[in-house]
Image (cartoon, rainbow, N blue to C red; front, side):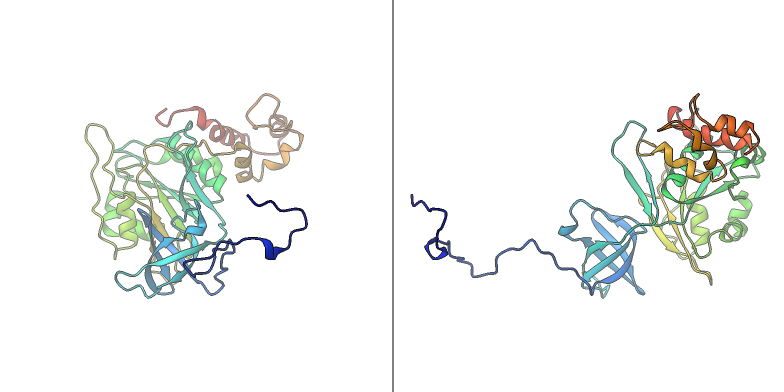
Length: 337
């Protein structure tokens, strides 16, 4: 074996010839500065349906993105065939910075985080007042996820002809959450869509709720052109509905102000393993000043929390502090409690 000293001449170094005659690989990736901008509408087994200008384009994730996955609502950069014609496929080469992110886990012990939708402005939490019965713990968990992800919550109560909304309105009154109350008749004649649409114009709104509450029926009324999914029914024995939406789907609103609705699969649990409790307080700006005297890493739900004395001095409504702590403790309870 030939040995070389410290001062070898590069002409003395043997090099292996490139038999294929092609260019050697490089780790320098192209910047794709001329890539087109698109919006992810839905994701199905590695294929992403995107809106590029006024065309629907099917795309796949580029290898250089690694494990970073695009989700519904993402603004992405695409290259390749952007014609939208049949049997064409573009590549997503960049995922733009997100302004909000709705996430959940299967349960509170599950380390695997599932991203539901990106860049949504608000979260419409749809719950039936009866058949099936409301699940306040699930609503609380959705609220925590919305506050943590930077989304404004909207409470949509359906089937008011079967039960009054007073109890739920009293429970969430201190949170000052905008709400809409609808009946089954209003869902059928389109009046419910008109009530809800007032809160949706010009915004991207994700709809979430467990099966059977009328979520997909409401979305189909808001976007009548999309009738490909058939709504399910509520099981008379379990009180749970059949899943009618299998993946998140973004649909455009037909209004002068524009806007999008994102229909998500019906959920039976909403895990919060990914939530940092210290961020939830940011959804209560009236309570934030009272945290200045809190001990380091205070969860705001412990005996030494400074909020107790601050609220007792009259700086904020005690109902607000109670609501905050109810949301913070929701991870310790089961959704059916």
